[in-house]
Length: 221
Length: 167
Image 1 (cartoon, rainbow over the protein chains, first blue to last red):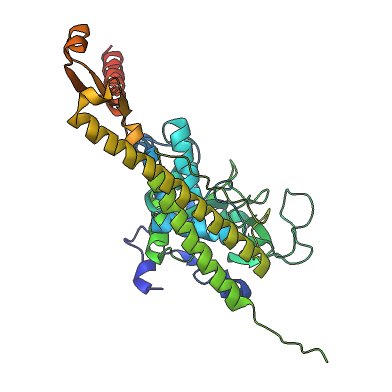
Image 2 (cartoon, each protein chain N blue to C red):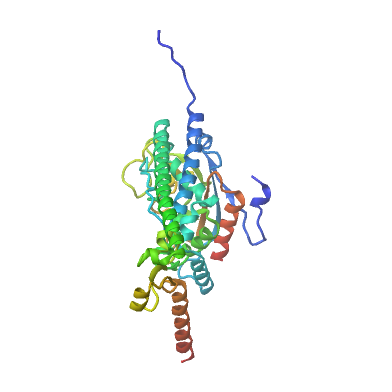
């Protein structure tokens, strides 16, 4: 990883924190990584500049663009990774493809308020997979690991199947990798700080990950 | 005496994942090539309900399924290319000699082109042309572009907003 890639672009850009990947998982998936940035929560309706940006983005997304997207390096990298972990990217869509699908179906990127719009802008611009957690409910650093026997995801009945890939904090899984978020770990109406989390896969450059996190953080400011 | 050999399968899994990536890219290219021209079956079912490290057998099945889709997509595209080539040849002959292809119509879709225009061999001056053998190929410009219609709608909406804002 190039040190310059994670250096903030300006004083107002916080440096992304780097999480860790369990060694056996890292051995199977070189290039897999997790990074996040913490920002004060800006919840509620999006301001006009954010809505305008969504409209501008809508004008740049077409059906043909959505089809050709899967040939571009970053969206392709996520598609391949989905396949490699057993998911069907045409059913469980990658974040960027889900956005493209919604854009085509809805006719535009509809504003869903913050922080969802901030993630939409950053994902659409960079292609990097982002999601948000309530930072105050996370315990320590985030990591990607396989679930241990007896572990479960809050809000879901039963234990996780052994070996399920999850994003975890110091206490346990907070969400499945590219899957649902554990109950209480996601953004709540009373959240005060957000953790914007990027999952990096092989083929996604570090600079794109940093850019995505900064872009989401800047949109939330 | 049975000989037991411990094999590190990790390298095999890495190689299979590389092949999966390669096939996924090839399939994506074929889908893009056929977009708007022909329907290509591209679905490969999920191997797992939730994300996990796939074992060797599962990766092999996934690789084989993707390879099958790629072969099918190539065949479908090849067939479509043949049809379009034949239609291009038909159009070439039709333009050279319209009277030999009376009332024949070739659409842009038949040639693998976007849009809804077509070439139609028809008589000049209607029944008189039919009697006189004055045949020609008429090119239809197709329907109005969706983008232009959208622009008109946006302009109209913008004007409406301005009016209501001024009011």
